[in-house]
Image 1 (cartoon, rainbow, N blue to C red):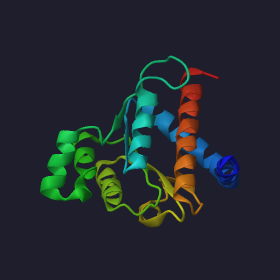
Image 2 (image 1 turned 60 degrees about the horizontal axis):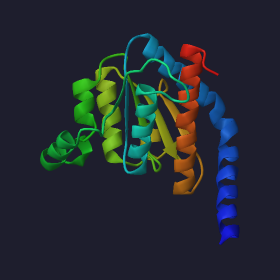
Image 3 (image 1 turned 90 degrees about the vertical axis):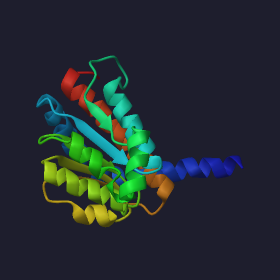
Image 4 (image 1 turned 120 degrees about the vertical axis):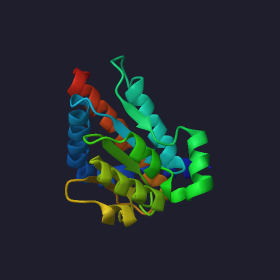
Length: 194
């Protein structure tokens, strides 16, 4: 069994190295977009489903609290955080509006939406992107495989960070690393933290 575990570590490292070179300049561009949003005193809205929702929560908590070192809190909202609203929307309006409705209520022109999806095919996240566009909210999408429907719904001004590997768990691992890279770059660019 220890060999199997070692092989899993090796596959994880290989997947990250496979996409790292392609993603590095896009991650830097995404960090610049996030920093500009914050410098303009706007907020970051984040959403995803399942494990991607958990990563959205981790990302927002790193922005609101801190990443590696203490620094001022940054305005970030995990759109899945209000269970009462979530269940009300799902009960009355279908799950496709679960992120679009709060985005329409909270999103303002100049804000930025970060969408996280391993498959890129979640209809509720595509709806969130449409709601973001209606509100003048910029979009960064973390996708996997071929980008799916989310990748197809993005405009030229949007940024897609696509982990082009065919394993769901590897995509999640890459997305978490990408989010940590974004946190590091935000702290460095805004506060000079090394």
